Length: 625
Image (cartoon, rainbow, N blue to C red):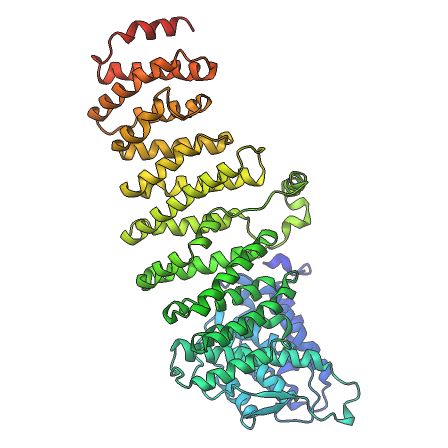
């Protein structure tokens, strides 16, 4: 940490802190008793103090430099906090021109000082700051002018709600929730007029952060605030919230989060109208840095789990509509789909632990999302290989390239994270009876989708979108196949064997063969009605596809659970494979001969008395290779 500070030779860090912070802290602490001290000097001193604290205080745990800085600043902390709180609220001097830069500086100073003090368990309390802020707002019930004290008051309360994360619900119990902010009368003594658009944006954001805190406490019933019973007031608050969506700009997610808590108490038809209005506005944020926060709050509103208890057809139709919209949007901007899947998986995991009765109805209703998420990925585009090669080269440069040093957002993930997140959630359901039932229904749907893709696209090239889609479906199935039950296995294995009739890339065909082998080994009674007919030469399977059937036969023979099952298997398979050794297709003959040799070697160890006459034939095959 000390390498972040230039220390002269022959001096210690304590000397440097004394030289820098001594005059600065003295200027700030004594400013109240020095009426002729320039405000500009005090402001610069606060900037220096904040900069030093930000520079030296790092990490989650106090270090050596932190302790030294705390030891030096400890005598000044009470007076520093008092000065910063007073300057943020500007007392009761209504004539002072609102200054957004001044307000943000002292908000930042208070945030750094409180965080710094809490690292060392220094006793600090925000109740004094909250009470002073409420004294400014006490006369503001329906409307308030955007004066300097009002700006400081809403800024302070907005910071308190984010810093405390609970524990101040009693202080905000009487916060005015339906307040209209007005522009004050302009004073001729102000000179240069302030930037009213920036002031209004900041005030609205801080005000609605406070409202969001109170709404969250009221609607969830947490803390000491009683839940709301007045539905008309909730409707009025929601209407006021919607009236500000065009004014709050990049902090739109605050209003949408507020609407998410109010939504279950609103009329379903009115709520659908509100959601449509918000979606239209959200389309303007697709290419902005605020995309993730805004769309995440919208998804929380649109897919609120409490809607399942309302059972309103209009809400279910609205959810279905925006699942389609987000899916289409996710094809070009994958973060939109990542946000949707992340929200649904997090919500379902919470229900899985707290209220399983609501989990599975929601899962069955959103099966299309689950199925799409298991197969989600980028669509093939022209020059995609060139783009991927350029990205791989950039990544290989490491820290030599400044692009690799950027801190990426948690939502800037690869597309496969959507599949991994959804499949991980599905695997966690496997040990529950209802979960296994749902997984089996999903496996049947996945198998049907794989067959449909194989029928509709019999010929395609490697690494195209169809190949990737088939591969993703097969990969998801191979992970979930251990939870297949006997009733579903017949349907799934029938579809898998049909998939082998069509031209598929090796990566897809290998997975299909693997799944068929796992199912037959788990349920050997399926072999006679479903697998043995495939070995007959008069079957519907094309001869060029028999190599896959032979591969499945080899895997099954080595993993059958009992000797009785193996005897039955060998007695049905070996003679059928023997006749395929004389087939006109060279590849089929090659696979059949090798399979017959391997099966014969297995029978010698398991059931040596089975088909002794084949011994000479097999030995001749070995010697003729």
